[in-house]
Structures are given as C-alpha cells and as structure tokens.
Amino acid sequence: MTKEHEHDYPTLASGQCPACGAMGSLVAFSGSLPLVSGPLTTDVPDLTGEQCKRCEETFLEPESQARFLAAADDLVIRGRKAAGEKLRKVRIKLKLTQHQAGELAGGGPNGFNRYEKGHAQPVAAVFNLFNLLDRHPDLLEEVMEAKPLVPTRVAFEKGPAGTTVTINKKGPSPKTGARRGAAASAAR
Image (cartoon, rainbow, N blue to C red; front, side, top):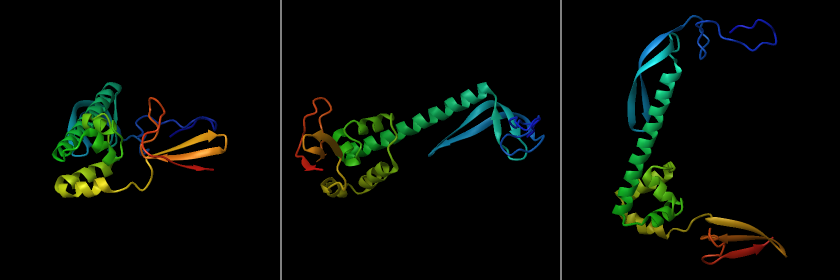
C-alpha cells in the first residue's frame, strides 16, 4: 500500500492483493467458483475477475459478483425450503398442527408456518428437537407436558399503584389487548 502524503488514505499499488497485500500477485481469473450452504453445493460458472497467486482470494468483476450473489441467495432459499419440507414431514408424522408445533418449538403459531414455507430459518434447537422426535415419537407426550422454564410473555404496565409486571403464557391478544388464560401479577 502506498501513501503520497501523511494525511492520505493508503491505496493499493497496481496488481497488489487487497486481502494479503502481496505485490504484483493479481492475475486474470476466468472460471467457476463453488458455493456451499449446509448440505447443498453448487458451482457458479463463467465468472471473471482477478485472483491472487499467493492467497488465492478471488475478486470478481461487478457482473460476475452479481451472478455469484444471486446464486448464493438461491442456494440459501433452496436450503430453507428443504429444511421446511423436512420439518413439515415430521410434524405430520407426529400428527401436530402448525400451531401445536409452533408452541412446542417456541416460535409461536405463525412461526412454524414460516419455517415450513422456507421464509424463515429456525434455530438449530428446533431441528434437533424435531429430528429427535422423528426417531423417538414416543417422547412427544413427555415434551408436550414439560413446563417452560421462562414465561412466554412478560408485560410491564403503568398503573395507579406503580408498575405492574404481568406474566402470562398466552399474553395479550394482538388484536384486542384482552388477556387470554390465567395471569399472575405482582406490583413493584
């Protein structure tokens, strides 16, 4: 990297690698690069740019970069859909509704729908739980009976006596604000 004046930002010399700093190490690149997302892999062909001879980092031209990023996005979406199909298969095998599966996984009634459609990526614990239940469906009843260690919803409300903390598994209704289920309150 070079600087003409002390206050200048460092700039790269011609042919200098931005990743490792090796001088004169960039050469023309034309070929394919692999993409990996979980168990899925693909190659993106016909890419152009520069590659460092020393560290082998590749710097794509704008058009190739756009195609590479689009292929990466597509691979992630395919992975989410495949994971969602697996979760759906296990949910149906266990005879659970999406609402029940959402309560079990902790993602709420709409969360599981988003997982199954590939719109959201569940955490590893959800996959682990459903893989375990797929192999041992006899554990479902025991898992369903387990009490959560923390409440699902906690609400803080200002009242005449100060702040009230309301702990409620169901929480307030998103449409009306009315409480569903039993609530425990403690004045602070």
